[in-house]
Image 1 (tube, one colour):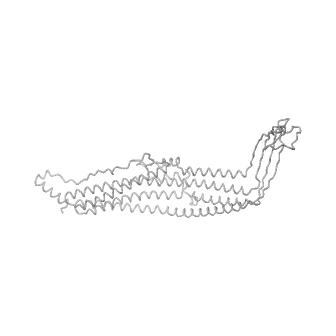
Image 2 (cartoon, rainbow, N blue to C red):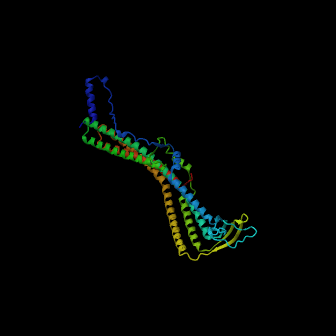
Image 3 (tube, one colour):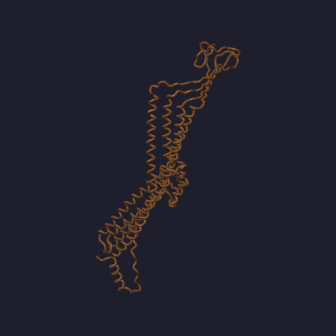
Length: 462
């Protein structure tokens, strides 16, 4: 079968015989024009973020995880204040009005009990109806259990604050990851459309070669099959783009897709995150480790609180009772001060069960701390190594893409002059598409690796 170059030479020779040589136009290379509905890009999201600062502001305002962690701190603070109240003075004032309906002249106190032993004196006796006021002040002097409970609550509050800091770190890391993946998906979608356009151009070239008699139907089918593969990659890439936008929407607190603008500065993302977070001097200061250690401390103090329940307690109590008199306005009838010693004897095994329960909680907290410590150690090692690996992968991807592009151009030129096969054309085109996608992914993986390396050993207190 004659090649396209032979056919073109024959046409040129025929036109030379028919017309003067001065009127022969230069041969024009075949330029396929392709139009396809799938080449239209995915519509942009209704809401878009233009910068890291804008995305972080939305995260601060709308994150449910952040609100939950803040509520956890508030809850722990409230419990700490409750524990402190057992060690501070407690004052109470109560008042009552009483009257015996059957004996109206008989003064009765709170609960309807008649008053005896409170004489009239110069200030008069109790009036009827009788108004009484009772003021009570108590202060714990020796209560080891309450002190241990206070220490446990303070440690739990410290753990809640560290958990809030860890939540901020994880949210920052998650936001950075989803921004990188969204920008990568946008770029991959563009490359998929370029790949489909190139596949359609190869198909048009193969079909034109077949029409000229320089190719066969197998060439056309092979290239058409490559078009179908490119369409499938484009559909999958568009769906990944939509999912990435939806993930970004959830990250910044919306129930709809959120995209990024084309001028989004991804390369400066690492520097921008350094403004929201600070590196740690020692990885042991990472918030999740601090929170876990504080939780162990809280569990230990809680167990000691239960154990201290076997010890006696000593407190001081003062009570003053005032009542209305007749004649007169009123007087303080009783003012007492007493020391209260409380010795626990038997509670039906409640205290022993409480101790065993809190011992189990303490052991669980210790194992959780050890598990987090191991994970942090591995995460730090992987993050530090990940940057070097990502840089090496980018270098190999760049070289692979350059070779694939050169191979594709040479293969296409060979096919145009009839020296290459359609199989080689299809294979070189597929290899080029894959190399371009791989390069894009490797570049974004490098950005992600740098972010992970920084945020793995950072604290975020924005």
